[in-house]
Length: 537
Image (cartoon, rainbow, N blue to C red; front, side):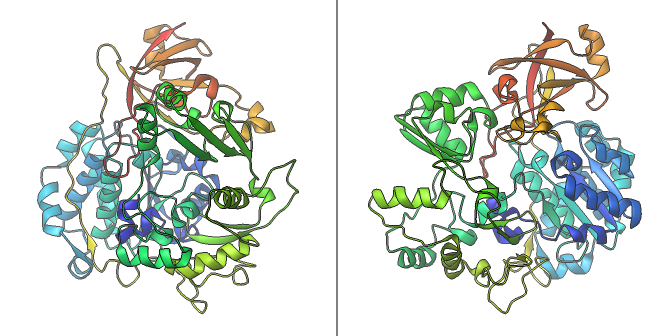
């Protein structure tokens, strides 16, 4: 969440993965950690099984991690602000919060206190469906811990209130003094191996590398001097904004690297129409993805195992990547392709190696200034690392926040953009499974694919019975945007009135159904909630 860069390291984990085993209480929400981040889930399970940690899981699905939870709160889709405010209400009412921390390290407490007054456990139960006694129990468990960590993922961010959800979790953590301590923190789990590194390098429309804002004249002047070229003074567009402008015919060319919007973007029919409106579509990838098949030009690039360079993982650790196998055919490093295109377009980009690029990164990025290949040869370093004698920063905000004082945000609950009605009476939520990865461009070509080779629809036993649906029946799922067909999986993982579909499968793409409604700040689509109808085929 780039909007939180000032206070919370641009959506980065404030603590390390290993630090989870130092937590007395771990709150996991919006993360099916066992299937989406299996390595990190092992730290959580070890903390519970061997270190005495208590686990609170807040998730509408009965995910595997609920087996390890002391408390599992099953909220209605899209009601996260309400249950977080409910916990904050209890903590303030019972004087369980860290008064010294709040007074010395934060601002905005009184406004937060005023806002959460109405979020009584009874009121929250009406919104969320979580029993009021669970809200009280979870609030007391979290607040009474000496160190409590929060772990979240896209189940929190992929809503029209995604930014509000993240800020609310930050409110909860700061209220109890859990930011800047061992075993605490607010820890978003990144969805892919170098998402953190891509964001760190300026892969966002409003910042250069290291989250240096493009609309800051001093920063822009520094970058112009380093690169020898004039730079724009206004933020660019997000992916979702680009797609809409392409659909309207106002963007005529798109260059897509390592992304497969024809499976991963919401309302895929809309995405296809947008691509057909373009004069030029260029795709740079390792396989002929569904998006690449629509491209005018396809540029073959290297996979992770064929590259030299660095990845920055979800805990902000900058790590070396080394070539393990030779690349096939005419495939080239991503940076070499970009350099060749840039040079032919009139701006010469001439680097000898990935190591040269890292030197430049360190020279213009304060949080990476101390990073050299020699220093990370054996073990990675956590940013910020401002100088070559600096050891790195495993835990953020230890003595103070990056902006000075942490800011409480008084946030009201807003319902999802689309709710069930007579025509579309079911909730749909989407996500990932253990055996497939993102849009399957890689995992469909491995033996993993044999374990889960086709799409399915998780449906409750009650809903299946009322609709006359049996296990493995083909069912049609339709939203206002389109329809797909897939096999029924009857389960108690989802509750009555809600279905779940993994988004990996192009031939029954869940994102044909999902809503393009956006978070107004982060411009993230509401993948996690929309209304659908179901019928047996």
